[in-house]
Length: 531
Image (cartoon, rainbow, N blue to C red; front, side, top):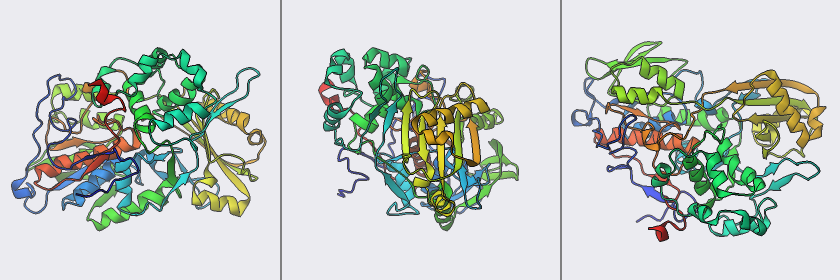
């Protein structure tokens, strides 16, 4: 038996790529229902296509992480795959496009950390980059709490603490300025220990109806530790802690800190997302036989003569099966225009999905070199500013521009914004100048300001009511970070994982082997003792 593991955590969990699937695929409730039942998988004659022989054909709607994972999983097993993407480039919410003062400068939707726990996303990236040479480590994940009154800023670092539980907890308390031994007397120890007793997916359901803010109130963590150690996690979902699910917060805390030996360190692409990630992956998938229609919108799905008919800007396209890997509003639009898709309870559940508050990303190309600005800094208490990054310390294209011009590229990011006007942009930069006063006077050579509100809101509604990979129509699968998954994963990793799961579900119906997946441990350090 192979001893290979996707990271350093010896307790990472392997999930075989064959039936039976986790309950998020088979035996799971669909939105609007309460009784689990086995979901039938699609079948085609002798593993071929119902459209007229040969390999089955699947249309993947959406060229983001989830759609690319689904396309990869299917194509590698001989399925004919066509990816339809509304934008002119791949990557979804992680795409990059030309912008700025130079012919090779780019813009994106902001900084993203590729944590070492993102096993299934990394498996996808390895298809085009087997050694992950296009990812590079960032030395630290620093978090700074703004000063209050005459106090100094409080900064936590995770670079020097052990990565393996429980020693990472001991190391954090020993060195953290925001959470010391004296602070332990203020904490509800019983509730804090519950963080070590988690069992997924049960913990998701146990915390139904509880917001992240309410959960933090129950813990009675000191205010500084609350901001730096926990609330930052909630806001990384682009959500207000008062509306964000406590179950998701606990899952993140488990995955990134108390339940995994991978630690809180992360990697970033060596260049913009298109150059480092999606361009090479596109070329790999083309070699696997995948075709792409970019700049094409899907309008609806219905029954065709022998399978499914997908209505697009380019006309009607036939397929044996479809993977919908879309953002929330796009999924709702397609489902609303597809009256025969699923049942009424499922359609109502999709219509009820919510999006998170808007976020804003500002990027400036500045005259002058400012190497003292950190590659990345997470913040709390600096108004709407949630993080600051120096792009030329991260991306090769930005670094070349900076070297050629003697400039610096800086980015600010604000989650869950209540104001998305130019005034909000200006406030983000004003807060950034509190951290680095030189930003207030540096000449701005070019500037971009981007506001979006298309991220899913993982709210306090019952976890079991969230949409699953399977749908009432066994020919149609969902994928993306809005889709429920039994494992303690989120964000980009949930998108990749559900993409692979969608492929596995269809492959089972086609009589073809699936792909193994991995997750962090499903239980906390004290989970066995709690049984």
